Image (tube, rainbow, N blue to C red):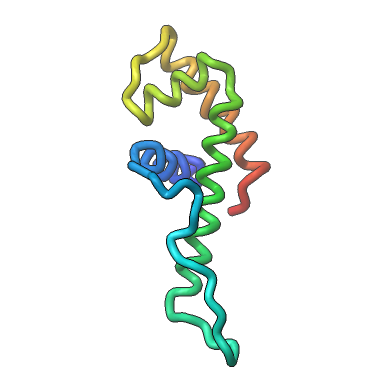
Length: 106
């Protein structure tokens, strides 16, 4: 549950960010000789995996029934709350926990 809440928080920042990169990487692929690794290679790999996980969460949220998606949007993006908000949010979180748990590694 803690991991899902962490991913939802990152998803919230992702949804609120002004992203105009159009899917192009911020850095170009480079070649280095001798197998040398940059000092931040692990951090870059981690961020790439987290970006993929956030996009997975986004896809799962969009696949939820409309009322559950609206409850998630209300909770994390401050949109209008649907009727029976707490109930629909709980069902949506349960569904996310199940589906995202199968698609996202630790």
